[in-house]
Image (cartoon, rainbow, N blue to C red; front, side, top):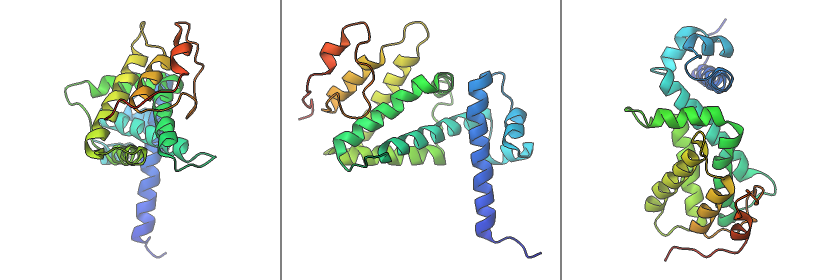
Length: 217
């Protein structure tokens, strides 16, 4: 049997890594962070335990990469869904809705992720995070930012702040209110993207359905 080519080996490594990332998402949501071991993740992914250590220095790094992959996949799907559009304002609205929506569909995972970021080691750079960042940066450019290099970190900070506010146990902010604040910041009409139910019980509907003007100069 002839040896596998470099491209075949690379594809096998990519698939093994993605299986580990997907298994991490599933297990954290089922069991939580503390109850999930690296051996559990390897078993769920159908890979050898040693491969986990080969790809990731530890569980925290693995979880952050898994969440960044999920965020990238959700964001890419939102931006490219039908009807496809190149309109920068619609794409910005879709991006905001995709990221905020993860707090509703993957609450335990996103809460774990934000807690991990706030630890001493902080934010971890990885291939998945870089792909996510590239999509968000492209969204900022298409939206029409005069200085994307400045606007992208601001957008990232605002989204992270909104995600934290949505995930605080016991006192979460209503998603429509936070969406309205972000939409005002980026001069987006409420009807763009995928609007949530506007009536959050706090009178947000009357505030969020009116047209907004850009706060930017």
